[in-house]
Length: 273
Ligand code: ARG
Image 1 (cartoon, rainbow, N blue to C red):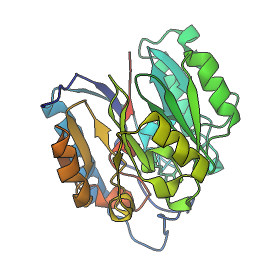
Image 2: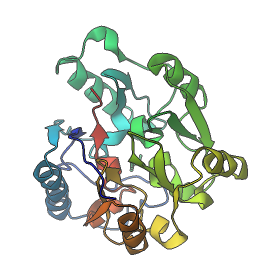
Image 3: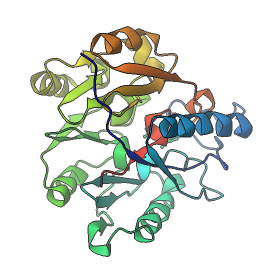
Image 4: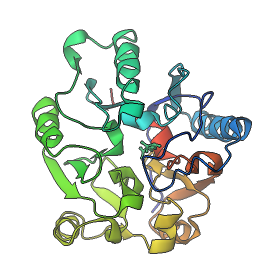
């Protein structure tokens, strides 16, 4: 059964100042060189792919000294036009939060709809939105207290999930929402605690289960518009299972950004307005 894409609005930030000068996740090795021009070309490919699929991409101006700002998903979570800002776990990224809040305040979001959070959360890095729930990772970055804050702010049930493998330090490295008009997800069970795995099985008995190789290619760091699933091209094992479910996998090469520990989803914040 072919799937239906719905037009999306995304916020992205060009990797003009992308570098790996510190290491806050196991993917980051400051000794490995990064080629900014390659990163920019790969990022532009992703942006143009969204546009060619009919989606709107807004751009946040990159700031010098914030090399991880390209990972725009971490700057906020937007649901029903309401914005929960971020509060970063590591000081290296903390100034990104204000850059995002400024953007929302100057782009038509009412002050009352934009919240500066009390508790640590890294935006859509740890919050994933399905039709029924907000799934929320914890263990490495988001504070469990941010889950209650998000539930109160958005008025949607927040389901806390414990991440246990440092390679999958954000929820969006281990789980992707495939259909947010329903509750369809794909995930890598090995990234979660036994209890959280049981929760995922109960909520999503038909989920697409990813294997270790595809997870290690950051294949779960994917963005779906309901039909097209943009994901790291190296996650080959996910393509056929996605097709069998009626999705159209679109492989992207974001190899340079992978050196920062992020891929498609990390570069893409969805503005659900
Ligand atoms: N270097 C960044 C960090 O460790 C990568 C963030 C990736 N973003 C994501 N949504 N998983 O914070």
